[in-house]
Length: 72
Image 1: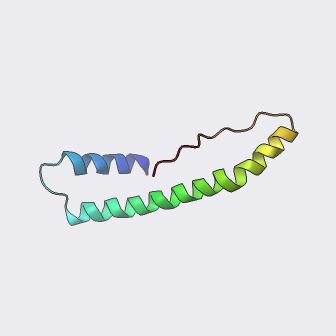
Image 2: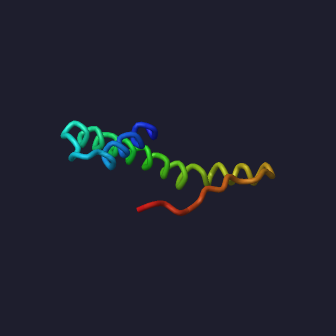
């Protein structure tokens, strides 16, 4: 999906004319799908990863470190 979004972004920003309604619709659809995926990832990182890291610590293994910066 990331490759498609990058390609679509390239089309939107490099075209000589305004984007078509179809292009805008695809961009909107992909944006919504991406937001859903990012929300699921945030749930895993915020809720499940701390428990998993605790299990790793108990096993004397290094925890998984995830950068805390999230784009707005």
